[in-house]
Image 1 (cartoon, helix red, strand yellow):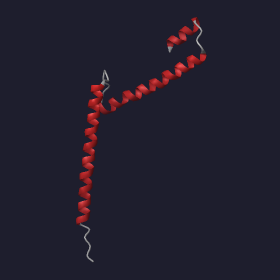
Image 2 (spheres, helix red, strand yellow; image 1 turned 90 degrees about the vertical axis):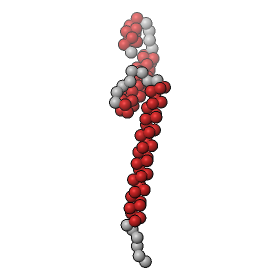
Image 3 (cartoon, rainbow, N blue to C red; image 1 turned 180 degrees about the horizontal axis):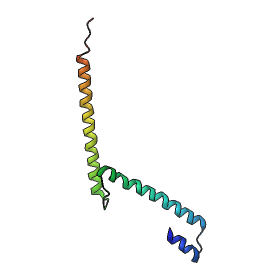
Length: 92
């Protein structure tokens, strides 16, 4: 962005083009920060390089976490259902 402002004195750059490029730069910078934030949140650090191998490992880790949580939820649900069913006998 600084380069475009400097060249504004020597060459003619349309004001609309300058505003558009500043707007796009801001949007893509925000998007980059969000994308960088995901590995930092999940892995605890910002990796030097994001490639397919890293993304595959992260996806596998997330899948395992979700499956583990799902398993714990199912086991808990079954235990609570069994304990409620055992204590809720009624005599007609």
